[in-house]
Image 1: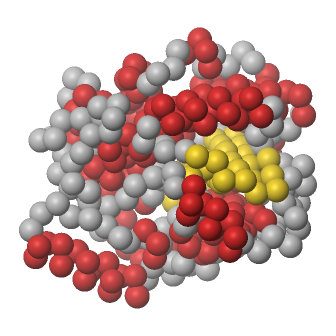
Image 2: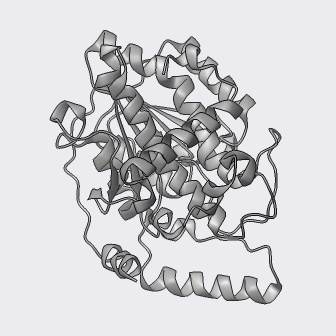
Length: 339
């Protein structure tokens, strides 16, 4: 009950971040042609980065989005093909980025799926919701890690990785944790019902963030200790409410009606919802260079508590278990990313 109460309090909170000068910075924002991602790019443009790569699945829509941006500072903006649900697309994107020799100062993992989708599998054989939100985000981040490390080392800067999570990660008991293998359980069409797939996938975003932060901190490479990784909650945002339901037409109608009402009453605009992303990605008050704990979760432009399942020794064991089981199914060798 307290979690639900806090949700409504946060939704009405006035959010704020202090703009900073991003001159010389190169930024990737995934899923940035619409909604929160597009609003994120709009905020970033006002802070004068050197370049923004809009990594999107649909190139036509991405180019259309670029044409709508107000780019008074003459920032270089490019649309690059990326389907975060496809391992092959992710590998192709990373190779292109590596071949470009561009540095990478900020990676914003915004792309993802939301709501109550019918069960389906990706071409790689994994359930689409968590494969997109968790497996895809994890693979992209790990494959880009050598570029981020090189940026930290050669430019003496402190890169950041931002993973979009959600307050709904607090609403799941993560039932698949009791199965022999979490990843295999997620791919079983009979084990998880409806919206809980989304909640679990967002919990996985928080878990990956905390695990990556620990591995970076424990690394013997000095540049790893310069990399900050945070998860954030944008809140309930109008652009995220096109939810699908795989049940009856009556359920669909009820869900659509509820979303419409909630959107009118409490949902944030994408411009407002993206402020927490911007704060975590750019604020001088945060980042390992400021002595702030790595791997934390932000909500309403401030650090917040995560699901209590991640607390203590049991929580740490759960984090490491998901980390290992995830790496077992990704097309990446640990030695290749040295993590």
